[in-house]
Amino acid sequence: MKYSVFIAASIDGYIADIDGNIDWLNIVPNPTQDDMGWSDYLNSIDAIIMGRNTFEKVLSFDVPWPYPVPVFVASSTLKTAPEGYEDKIKIVKGNPGEITESLKNEGYKSVYVDGGNVINQFLKADLIDEITVTTIPILLGGGIPLFSELEQELVFNHIETKVFVEHVVQTKYTRNK
Image 1 (cartoon, rainbow, N blue to C red):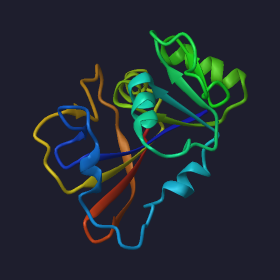
Image 2: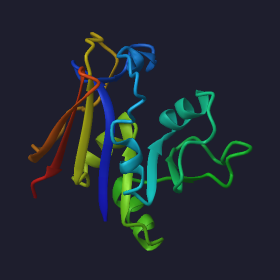
Image 3: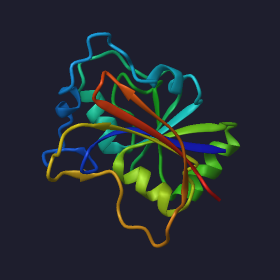
């Protein structure tokens, strides 16, 4: 199985501000509405695992459900999917190894890992194979960090760097195992 991360962060490494907001992601004008590789990325995965907080953030957007693949929400507190999302999400519990085994048994091969807490749990379990970080040119000075402390170093290889709308830098790495 391949686990990958595709996420935006501030220059100082935060994925949300101190209040958990992400409206700062839109500070750079995008006149061509370039999706910066998001559609291609979505077409390369067959499932998503995200944390409850990330799921709730997605629900707060005033848009139709954005994911064309099954979404697994890792939560120790949610018991059932919210009304209207029963056919869109499945709640999963357990550590990354247990979740991996379950997804593998269901036949998934390429999984997008989203949400700060879930990303860091999968990193600590050394399960992340690829990371793409899109850096927005802002210093937030605090908030929810993209990465937390690890018990061991994880070495990644740089694959490519792209610049979008003259200000946004996207860098892709793969795990050097």
